[in-house]
Length: 300
Image (cartoon, rainbow, N blue to C red; front, side):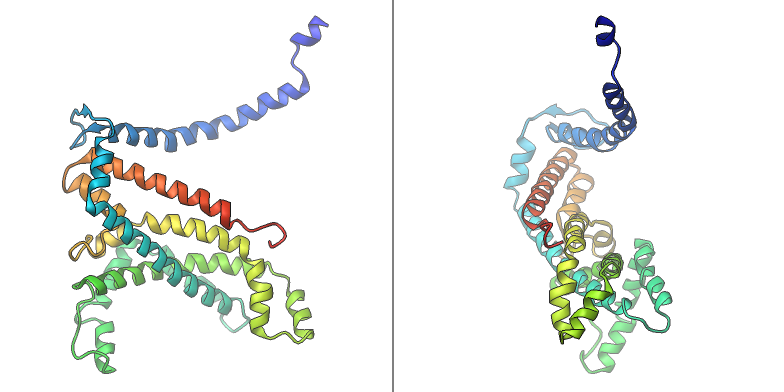
């Protein structure tokens, strides 16, 4: 009996093997996620202005200073509008594109490859292309003036509203192909027999869309809603390269404010505090989104 107690059973060996198999993944996650997160939290609790310099322990002063700063709340509001506008534009464009690419037409395969090209183009190239297109001598201004929609060339990045709308449109153009491919993959998984049966019953195309397509795409839309929101919220490169957060802070979202605070105003710890607050907001959003927007099994 003592021998059987000291000898590991088959069940305990399987458990030990499971821990050994997931150990590399847990170590990788700890090194790439947990360690940077803890470092950011520790940095936010000190008073460090420049990387490599010593700082005193200040507790939650940086959080209090960030929450009392009107620029934080303005940037948070802009981030909310940024995510909402990008979500609407990208969803509409992705849905329309996916529905077209789901049809059979000559050159369908080439069109599916072509649509993804704008997504794989480097951000710097995207910025250069759109800066040229929207310049005073660019194609967009030429067409608008030629059609009589403008009296003369306009500066798309020179006013607050036009700069904000231009950056949103360019970012939506940059990312909608990724969403279109995901929606197209979901459409491909819907059985054709459902549409054929609905057609036999006399259902119109609109009825098929709302009764078949949308309900069966709920799992895909749920993932895109969650991932797309998190990705859009954290966009920094395209905004900074196009406008630098201007004019007059019109495109200063939270990621841009974090960069400015850390590397323009040289308040590294306060930037870390804003980063931690942003992470908490995204975490709360993700939990609420999963809690209330997760598709039910009977609807999926």
